Image (cartoon, chains in turn orange, yellow):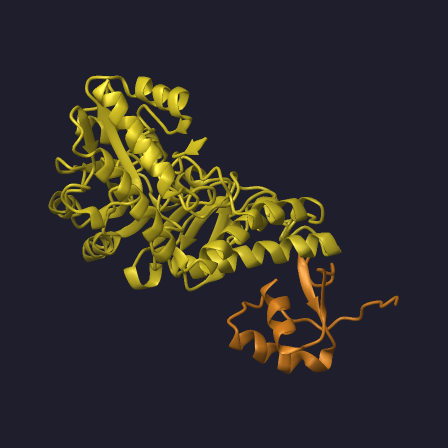
Length: 64
Length: 382
């Protein structure tokens, strides 16, 4: 949730989703955003001291 | 009713706390369990409360604030997670059973050596004895920030210095002080601070936790549902999940965050504490010279080191009898008996009589204090 707070404060797009099984088995949360936002996101999270477990590029369905 | 049992719980809560809990009950899912709107709102609520507690206690990392049901649960988890077999712990006679009993269990089950520093005639911690007891090889110094019997405060920054000089950690029980006495973990060098949400922080019962300095390893006490890493055999070690097995009380934490916001709105712990202290001083001054009244604690010698409690007895009357007279005659709610602090009573010589504890809170008025003082004078003079 610190990730969400950081991104919203900085106006970075994205949203929380259930962590996809391709990223981690089990349950949990992940921040979903476009692959091209990766560098900006990483810099923002590092600047705010938000720990990152992993960053992964995967294809996800978007229904609406 | 004149409510003077704020050391047990702040029964009168800010309306903002009530509103926050009611709103949360109607809207929050389970924090950390999925990404539905309700679940995310619950997670946001918990995060906001974590950040508020971290700011209040001077804990540099909000993710090192771990919630539990109350201070007792936090103290059990902290003591069990910090102290290994055969290690040495130094504590004090001021402590509540929420420290004494977990340590007794560790002594029985892990062979932990426990030493107890005493107090002076006014109930102030004997810092020289504490310093003697905190020798190299000590793993932990566990000390209250304020006695729940007398209200006497402890210089926990100095205790932390002693602990660190001996290579030990310093754990502080802030159950009686969080919200009304300033604490700054980083500046004071405190390693673990345990708190409850329903007293000075003015939140709901069922909230509490611990704040842990970076680099201090508190092993998980309870294991179970975490919302992450479900296929791992043991509970995850990441913060704050390592100390938060099971569903959090997000409804209560919504109220706790509102309680902390109320404190900050009213000037923070120093301003809130100053008001409560002034009320207690007024009560003390109203009864101190009454024949037959014995006041315990440090009011007569160092009022600046007292909290917001006036602890007293009337002649040889049982404390329960006095508390009942206050309730039935004047509608005053206070607490008699031993207050779960047996060593404090042994030190004060009040094991049989108990103590009448009147504890002031933010919502008390000077008029209420004057009624209470007059009531005690009436009881004492017959």
